[in-house]
Length: 278
Length: 278
Image 1 (cartoon, each protein chain N blue to C red):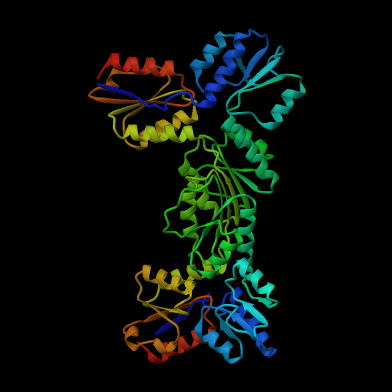
Image 2 (cartoon, chains in turn blue, yellow):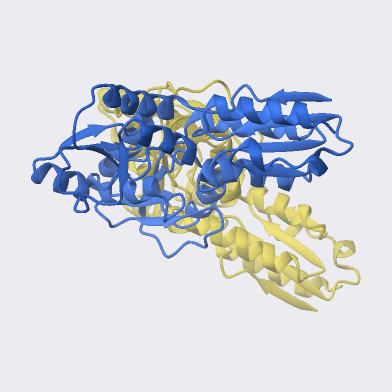
């Protein structure tokens, strides 16, 4: 049985950077440092960080001893940043630099008088933060949305993990309405590369494993992509979920993983697959 | 036999305006007034204007007695405007206001540091003028072009008579390369409406007549559209070209015409079709 791991599987630049920031802070053994929400969408990494003394809290009022808050890769709404600063709490900003860029463009487009259209999933924290930078006057759409009536001047900014096809589709709709369009393609290349490699791999293997948090949007997107290509696909968080029956008769196995999946979890999955066999 | 004339057939706003300007000037009986090239792409109108004393010249040096030049709807390159002004010749500007707008945006995009992409036909005078406003550093593409390597920051301006589908297609290609795109959709609505009505009409009739100059790009585009819908299509300049055999067995006839075709030529075609019969 041949087992392949995608080169693009696992931590992207922004996630690696955020994890490094958090674990470096943990080493300082400071009191009252928390992450605002889980640092990344991966329960195993969040658990490890907890063991090092840095615990996620849901909102800034739940703990009285908070002295510093680590902001996760997805970023936070502008109003929340101001609120945290106003209570004298330190902000340790681990927002992905690519998300920062998207926030900046959302603000710029709004300042320049464009009606801001955000392509992404409305409930995703990154999109929630982008909305705040566009002064909460934006329209959020995804590739399936039918567009509302738009203004003549439309500015587009994109959730960093969206596929390019979604942007192409939305653009072809917006051009029917708006006369002036400014697009900042803020899609992160690492997402595009990961999707591309996953697509190629899925076409060549008998079974695909997608490793990562069930609450991770980009991991879920990888699993959907594989399923759309009609290859048997299993989205697992850890190796313990793997069943022998899944591997029956499989000669080639592909493994990919979301941007928030640490390499040790991917390696464990690989080992379990090899040990279990087909 | 039922003969229908498209509501959108014939002179658009810009052409009507240019013709009015030219014939008003003709009434003044001024000496040394010429049009720079044919005022519109319609030989019959050009002939009528000649009879009124206003003759087209190819370039400003061919006639010694030129005191004023009427600029046609398509506009002229920026350098040429300056040259005409520098020799003390008056410019009577009949450039279509929508083309003026596209010229302005081509300049603006170039000034703002965008690599200007012009969607249109390279040899068309309108596109030649747009190129000059983008400081002759632009890339001209049409819907069939494969794109060259583009810069990160791309600005798009469109020949006013292009179909929206061409813009959608080019956009979906450019988004694969550029990270920031600013689009001015300078497609003229009247072109879009005319294409739409022609498409609907062509689907309902046995024979289509497209009336207008063989050198008119938008008229030729109408004829291509009809042919692509597999309806027998005849592109004629005047009623004298109509053959009885074309009408054999036809119960419904559709007539459309380009933006530069005067209503009297359309009416003559209609009459000839009715007189000839099927």
